[in-house]
Image 1: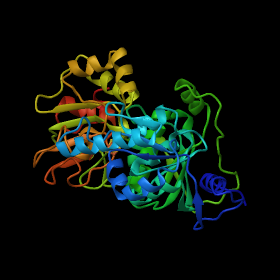
Image 2: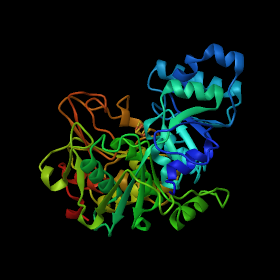
Image 3: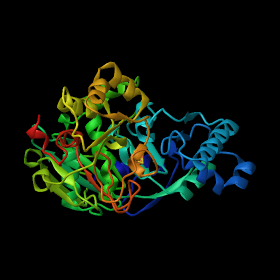
Length: 419
Ligand code: SF4
């Protein structure tokens, strides 16, 4: 019997020849991601850190991104503690305020590579399957232990094969695909499974794959992955990575606990309606819902290709007077590229407000907190009550094209009406 992607990677990292779903293995990951929560993690292990130090200076990747620049004395103190920790223990991969959202930074800095194993103290660590890595979120206590010992345990997940067949129609994007799948399987539909995407995937750029893998955890997945192909290789070359990686592919005769098939040409623009990510409806069913805030950005859809689509829709036009349009680049590099290409200028002229690279309003801590009774249409990945800082507000999730089209009309709008 052949092996799936997850089985192969976990066998490699646990020095085991064969593995089956359900087995527990001890692994030494290549990297451990933490962000602003590094402060809480190191506080958990202060005495142990003093006694033993960190396992390795290059294991940790620390990105300050969640509440940046600091929004209060408390967050400023946390950031200060993290900077002191980085200096004291000589942490190699540290990215301070303004570099970007952790997941984007890990990928564009070439730290997530095909065939690598990365764990992170953030749910959306699953994003790096976009470049053929096995990556998954762990909790803070596990991260603290990993920081000290360099090892942790994982249960070998069941593997699920998702066949994506056919071609996407105009006005339909990767975000619609992943929301459609989540609406179909539910928010817990592939709990603790390794999701592999197969089929006509060459039409998806690495940015698209990032969006789809990023939302893997929103269907319960342990990890999600697109296999390395020419699209991946071209992307890796564009960020300065040549051939120093070892791509892993599933065997032809691997066993999958489930196989699901989607015809991409049947998918239409969709939105995830309040207050769960799997409450997915076609845009046409919610087209009369008015909105007060639009957000294009975050680790899900804050890349240049996302802003380009939005700029095409908004070029020479003005956002609706009752709508605030927030633009949140996922990294400084993306921000610079969007500036050079005139995309930011187009968005600003249309009425957009550009926020510093980071998580911004995605987690409801600052920058664009909603008021009771308000609605936000966002390209982020979560819409539970209170996610954007107010339990009496509503969050709808959609593609950058749907958000841009809706920013123009002031109500949820099918992008095909304006494209
Ligand atoms: Fe989490 Fe949002 Fe930041 Fe992504 S942008 S890491 S979802 S808070």
